[in-house]
Structure formats: C-alpha cells, structure tokens
Length: 295
Ligand code: SPV
Ligand code: MG
Image 1 (tube, rainbow, N blue to C red):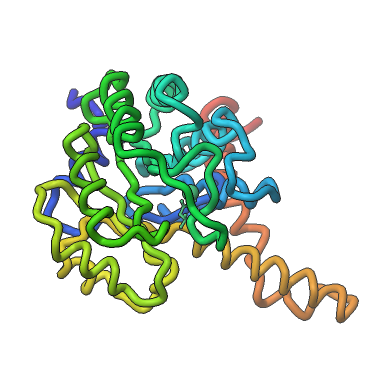
Image 2 (cartoon, rainbow, N blue to C red; image 1 turned 45 degrees about the vertical axis):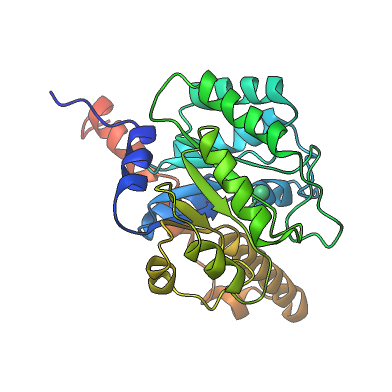
C-alpha cells in the first residue's frame, strides 16, 4: 500500500511547483475548514486572527502554547497543510528550539518567523517597528533548521524591513542573509496601499528561493499579476476573520434593532450547514456501522 503523504511533504512539494500557492488565513477550525471547501492550498494560522479571537492585541500577548493549540485545531479540522505564523519565535534561539520541536511534533507543516523583536507588534500597528539584527535573526533560522527532524518541515523567514521603513536595500540584504542561514522561503511584507514595494523587491530577487506575499494593504493586485512577478505563494491572512466580524456585528445589530431574527434569517447560514461543518453525517454513519439498521 502506498504511504500517505505527510502535510509537510505536501507543502514542500507545492512550494517547489511552478504555480501560485494560495493560502487562506484562518483563526479556528471552522475557518480552516471553510478555506478547504473553497479550494485553498494551505492554511495560515494567523497570529492576528488567533489573538483577535481572544480579544487581545497581536503583540505576543498569548503564549506559544496557546498559539500552537489553535494551530492544532486548524490542522485537525481540515486536510490542508498548516503554516503557523510564529511571530518572532517567542523569544531567543532557545524559545525557537522549543517552538520547532512542539510544532513539528504536532504535525504542523511549516512555520514562519519574522525578524522583529520579542514581544512583537502587528505589522500594521502605527508605532515604530523594531527589528532584531541580521545576525540574531539568522541564528534563529539556523536553530529552526538544526532542530527540525523532518526534512520536509518548512521554515519561512519573514522580512519586515519594508514595514519598518528601512528600504529596499536593507530588505534585499536581509532576505539574502536569511536564505544563506537556511530559510526555505522568504515572506516579504509591505503595508503600502499600492504594490510598488513588492514589485520592486520581486524584480530584484534573483535567488531560487520562493517569495511569499500577504496582500492585505494592496488588495487590488491579482493572483495573475503576482504570478507574473515570480511570487510563489499568496497569503490572504485576515479576510475571513474580517468578513466574519462584519457578519456577526451586522446580524446582532439587526436582531436588536428589529426585535426579531426573521429579518436576517435569509442571510445567515442554516443550522444544517453548521451540522455539515461539524461532520454530523459521520456520526450517523458510525451509528449505522455499530448498531445497524434496527437499533
Ligand atoms: C497575521 O495574520 O498574523 C500576519 C499577517 O502576520 S499581518 O497581520 O499582516 O502581520
Ligand atoms: Mg502575524
């Protein structure tokens, strides 16, 4: 019998293909399952999303164990590989070691760490972003690569130089150093309202290591345009989160305004749809197998 591919293998293979890998940001099992339903290739266990669910800032407030717990929930809720957003690695190289051991043991397909200090701030926070030195971040990447047991486990290095306003040269310099340190892919992040920074970065990228983008602030760009720039993975990090907040907010407001749920009944999903997402059919199937027709 053919051995089933691991999720780490699936992710690594996708990153090696000449195509755009589409990743949906998720914040729990339900959002991960919906991303799978709509044909995304992988899940981004979003730090912003998991923090938002707990109504705390995306600023290293939750612990690594809490982030891991939610990534595991996503992993178990769908068959897609999960890339865990591991912020700045939850501390120094010793924290990175613990993190890689735990995430790998939990069958998370890959992790992403960013070159910011710990505790971090979300990239769109308007306060000054502080980066660690290239040497310090390279040591974290080398640690992650040294610690991983499965060669397919993916380590993504995220460059925040553009976010911190340090310019293209610094971004390229850092990205190259991170590749040298062993990164399997580079996530280049930008908070500009147009994709000009990403376009310039991608045009100057000559290494055979995949580039990843998160087009939150420059939403006009299409997958086709990103593909033409040589980008290999696009992460829609928080659209499902934002959509769900808007939908819940609207529904609750309208119930209070009108004193009945009838006004929104046609716009919200049915209880049956929830049952489907909960795999109730599987439960019934099990009863059939165990108890047969005439229980
Ligand atoms: C996240 O989803 O937590 C990310 C992407 O890291 S961003 O919010 O753009 O920093
Ligand atoms: Mg994050």
